[in-house]
Length: 263
Image (cartoon, rainbow, N blue to C red; front, side, top):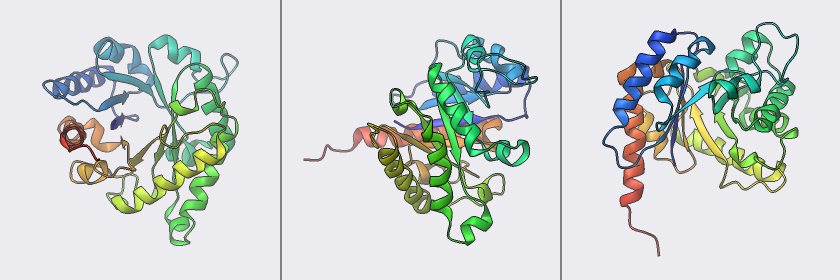
């Protein structure tokens, strides 16, 4: 399976979110092999977007979550509230949350555990800065971030976790990692998952790439067996670009289905 997640960030309101969601649904029509598609509008647009994508092939995601179910946490939203709104997936630990709002490895771990406990699919974001990359610390940084996320993760349900490798230096810069480099990091992530999570099966962990993913490079990323999909930022609020990337995922799946079975 290939997965395409659109992170709409703070770019669209309820009306625009509904229009985007309708366009995505139209793009899926007529395809024999459909990728898994998740859209993550702002909190204020979740309810209206759910009315559009409910009972379709498109799932509804949120951009963040708190780890407590209730409490005096002004401005936060709990896992229970997201479930009540119809959300199935939630982004956790995006680099913008870490850099701008003080998200830490510890809070990422707490949020991941809380999401799983409420039946949500956590999409745990990890990635290195340009300085860390230049210092040859990519794998060390990513595995440190993952260890924190995995530390509080129950073995039951761990196979539902998505990991999104988003090198910080690539987000919004137009400078994406190469498919080969991304695939190598994804392989390390799977190995760490297998070693860190009791009963963890590397074949069950979905690892996505994010960071300046767009229609020009989507197919090259998606055809890599280690890359299970894309977490798309800026391109996901441009309907034609986003649907082109969904089409690329569908093309890859159709190619896989048409390939002769190995003996």
